[in-house]
Length: 158
Image (cartoon, rainbow, N blue to C red; front, side, top):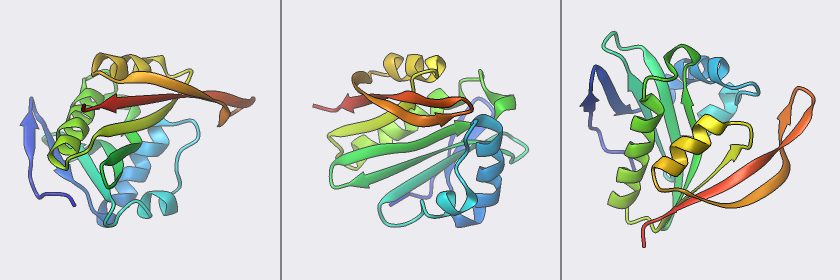
């Protein structure tokens, strides 16, 4: 479902990823999340229902990625991840804008996601891009000391 295209913003390049990028994705995932996805889970996110986009610097180093799944007209943002050392540069915003653009191009009516309640930076980003909070999943995410809630959010095209 991914088109082979590149979009340049500043010195960063967005481009579709393939299973060949999973090891690079795993390094980004491990740097950014306290409970990262495994290599096997990342590898399972390539196929007909998925779009996976990476963001690279001008040295062709993967700095972040986003994984979405689209079933008919509903997009689920499965994972958006920026390497810890590249956070705060607006890369997450660029990836999210790409998700919204591609979802619209693929006739989506909504984008759904869940985010850790403690991840206020991500929640702020989603709100700034037009997402709304639609619910809470109690005790959803594992933490080092137990569980934390997931905030459910959605973006509606209509």
